[in-house]
Image (cartoon, rainbow, N blue to C red; front, side, top):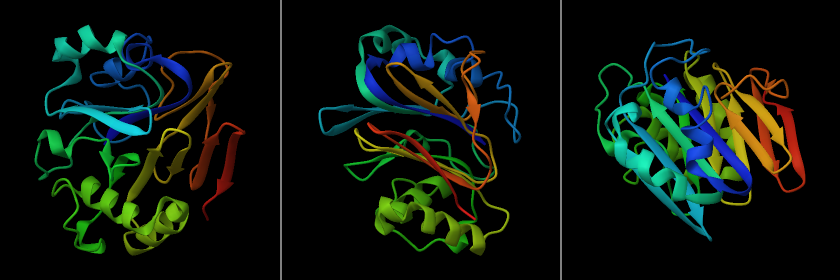
Length: 227
């Protein structure tokens, strides 16, 4: 239902991650190569990055390919931790900037690639939007990111048809789950990329198996089973 990307490493420009690659999020917004559900991601986009300890965000309900302002500013935005996404809205969900990832609790940035029945999630007054992804994000924040694996398993058991690919970062740590959709990792000399699909054809991209948790820190990349 969406495509997302995370970066943890040396400071790089936002443009180099999402606009410049041959199959970056810009291209994935209109021509994704591995998307299993939906053909376009035209219902909004968002990019979040860390300026010191503070997460900053820029979100829109418009298609990424039509935003000239981001193309102008993105080369000047640099960070060592970035979370970005393009959105394909679930049928019946509103299309508005607050429905676009990344969501935040003030310390973490979170993107959800997938779908979940809102009825299985606790009612939350802190959710940024009424969309399923925003309510799921609020639930994960409330449970704590150290409990991400348990949170995903519990929601997945309550809604067996849910797709729960989560990507979350806090500036020094990045976590992701693979639950019903695709995720790949690229270990670069200057950092690590996690992405719904590779942004180029570099041979070092590796696919993460379904039902797994990925943790990225300065110490490296750790992949563990969620089952």
